[in-house]
Image (tube, rainbow, N blue to C red; front, side, top):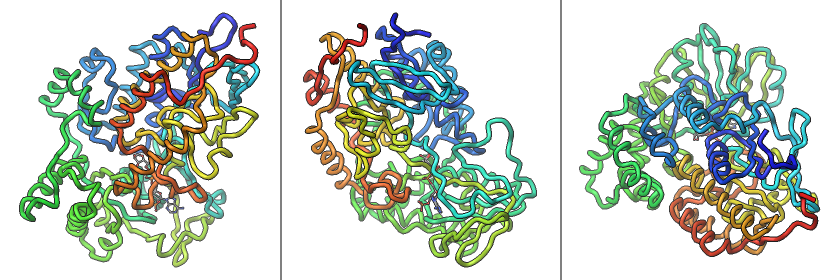
Length: 540
Ligand code: NA7
């Protein structure tokens, strides 16, 4: 194991997904003794766990859903499809782990069960599920934004005698066979939408328990065009630069939907619908800022839903009437068409809520549905759940969950006052899920490496965000959210999917501005952070 001579790690990282892997690479390059812990048996984080059939990337996709820091890596990896599936993404992440020799510092099948800051030494003391105690100068949370699976507390769930699966904990060791079975699925987020058409093909009957209809755009996954592959490889530095500056490697539409004639707009929407992916969201610049433009695109999708579904009553149940895109947009393949099959039915659990689960099925307030298999596609305690479930203890033994009980407080989304030497990657109040994921991880990883270097060069043992910086940061994040339409509906960006979770828009919506901002903080000598020496040098 690579530790300093005294057995103390410089940096412990929790999570071997795409953020933790980059942080390991970067910090090791800086000469630190680093170890990554992950509860899974393999690297890849979310992409390791989400093995349900049909799991695919739902961002603009290849060739840009990848790391950007190494031009050689970009040149050598071949993406085959526009929306790579889970096996393709996982094999990419495995390739990265091998290529950069990351595995020697990754300890798999190991959960961190406790993390406490020890004031005397200025070290983090971690307990692992293997019974080890690990001491590290710095702790990095790279636990992921969609990693803490949410299982609603349905009465009687444990009594169900059939098979039960959560999409985020899909069996690793066997395929789930739906053939001839009565399958029920609760949840129509991205996971449910990807899975439903696939189950429909083999199940005897599929009952979809829907609480909120979604805007599902056609993924139109297809082989990746050679010219796009070449474009990406040959222009990588410029594309990366543009992605850093604008949040997207390719230019964004500037035209406004509200200024186009109805005819023009329809032509643009029809073309975007045919192109698939996120083209419909991105074909005009005002969809997510102007309610009028938003309603234009929303109504276009509703029209497409009505056209896709034969039974108008079923179509009506699937029509979303809230802000388009305020819940994360979904890319589907044959989703609406699945409801035209005789073996698929929809149950509106907003109208008639689930009362309980019995040993043989789901009971709602207006009916009982007998099932052999029950799938929970019920999502995640998003963005904060991975870290609050660990619930680290900072100064004076204060628990993070208590500090965040009324809402997240952080400085730059990277650090929390009272938790010295702890950095959070892709945490709340950062652009995480609204910026290219890998690039965001790289920029945050580089920033964390920078502040650790700064502390080390100055002979400091601890770095801590000043409490006074946090309210202003919270306001800044909230103000950006208020100006957009993203905060105008119930979604996991808001914490609304988890009963009792404080409602607060958790994402910093100006990704490029965020990254400029943290860069400026670094340039200023880390304004808002306090650097100090530990009471007792850990090495003594
Ligand atoms: P999501 O997007 O959080 O979807 C979860 C779904 O489960 C959603 O339809 C929820 O309805 C539904 N849900 C949650 N709790 C309940 C209860 N108690 N009763 C009925 N229905 C419920 O998770 P996914 O895994 O699909 O996707 C996560 C992200 O992964 C996705 O955005 C992509 O980025 C990839 P609701 O809408 O809250 O009414």
